[in-house]
Length: 261
Image (tube, rainbow, N blue to C red; front, top):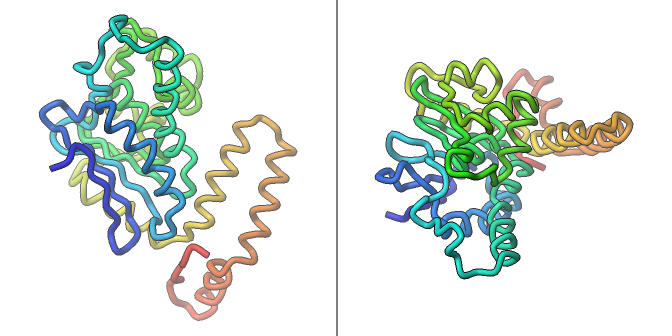
C-alpha cells in the first residue's frame, strides 16, 4: 500500500491517510511534496465537502522522517533548501485555508511537523492516549510547517513559546483544556470522527467556507475590514441555493439538503 492514501467517499468526505505505521507515520519529503500539490486541488474540488486527515497504527504522525535529514551535509545551496521547504509548507497553508472543514483524527503521538499538520486542521478529534510535542528544539530546530503561527493562534504566544522551548509532551486531556484538541473521544475514535465528518458533509459547505474566511479576517486585527467581509459573505449566502433550501425545509418541517451552491 502507498505511504499516503487519498480517496473521496460518495458522501463527499476526502480521506487522507498517512500509512507508515512502522515509522509512526513520519512524513517523507515525497509525501510532503504530494500533499503540497494535492491539497489545493482538493480545496477546489466541488465533490469534496469535508477533509478527514488520519493515519494507520498507534501514532498519528511522528513528524518529518528523520532518516531523510542530512543536516549540514546537504549538497543543495542554502537558498534552494529554503525554497524547497517553503514549497512543501504549502500543505499546511492548504489545510488551514481550505474552503471546507478539515478534521484531524489523532489516535497517538503528534510530534513536530506531525503536530503542525494536526493543528492546521479546523477540528482536532483525539483519543485519550493521544499526545502532542513540538519536538523541534530537541534536534536543534526552531520549528517549521507553520507550527509557530498555528500554536500561537490557538493557545496564545506565551503557551506556544513554552511548548516550543521545552518540547514537553502534552497529554490529550491537557491539550483539550487549552484548545489544542476540540473533541476528546473516550470510545471508538474512528466511528466518532466519521460521524463528525458525515454530519458536516451534509451541512452547508459554502457557508462553512465563508465562516472560515471570516475567522481569518478576524486574525488580521482590523474590525472594520472584518465587518466588511462578514457583510459581503452574508449577503452572498442569502442568494445561495443552500439558504433558499434551508428556508424552504424549515417551512416544510424537514431536514434541509445542502448542495454547496
